[in-house]
Image (cartoon, rainbow, N blue to C red; front, side, top):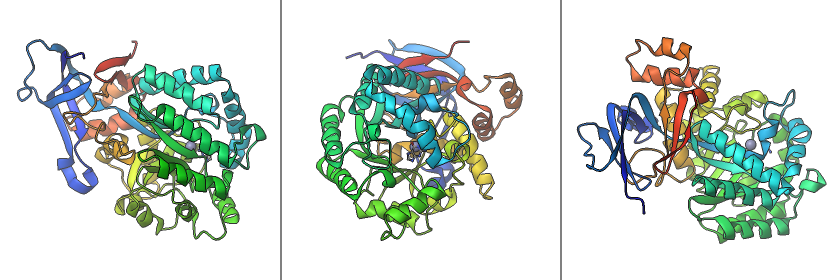
Length: 433
Ligand code: GUN
Ligand code: ZN
């Protein structure tokens, strides 16, 4: 085991709790701080005077930089990298026109490996250290993804899409083959190093009731795996779901009917849900991935963050690449802020930081391992340059309030603000000047 320690002197900012519930006590900002790491984990985090640094430790002086926990992307599709920023469609047409053709290539393991490597390096460039990721219907797509994540020592969750109707033939599995292939992938990958598996029915319209039943059986048979799907993203999609499942009172009820709404279930979008759905999601300890870049880019709608927050629903942020148009969680927060502005609700910088870090970790049930700088957690974090562009330098200068600087970072920052990304206590990405 590598027992060498590293002490980084820098400003440090992280969440100890949900600022919406615990107020200002939830956030720790240490302007002259020290982060001490050893064996890939956090040993201590505090003021320079309070952290006792071992004599043999390597010391890094990053006093003009800000350390944040790595960002967590709670909903993203790695096979959609090549269709990011595709013009002119909303969800159902966008799937037919761009998504399904792109996903059809992932039976080819070389294409899958190449795309997975590019995707993971792009996450690191943007400061994202953990993600909940869609593969395609092909089991090979998940093998390629996990291989690439393993070689980078990343904490990642992925799953094979289950989809047995309403898509091109070459992208369909069957209820039985999807159960068999998912189980084989779980046996091969789940719990290996920092990898986890998500049972991944695409969304209600592309699975028969039989397949959704088997998705529930997979969850029963494999405690600890996640459920990852889409829900109530677009108005036409919701009408379609109503015509396919007329007996269900709403979209969430379809998933409830198949016992898919549980702890470790993550539903992307939830833009068009009736008011009483929030209570049911919270009671089930299920999570929602809010994806504002995608909701705006493919014109899906405005997420009701206030209701989700009020009911205590677990929430994270997602890029939803390729429906979303940026890998950067900073850009996602920028759009999340505007989506709330349009609804006369103000997203604070502190709550945005929570959503991008500890909130995302809680949404993925990974907060025992990641999400902040508590001793014992995995040392996945980022080094932020608050002055990464001339405009940011100008705006940050003479701004003494860290909350205003954090807000400015969210509004003006992007991959250029991420100077380094550290994985398990080692630099995995360094931005070239
Ligand atoms: N709903 C079903 N499939 C998809 C997808 O690939 N992307 C998004 N954004 N929504 C979906
Ligand atoms: Zn999606």
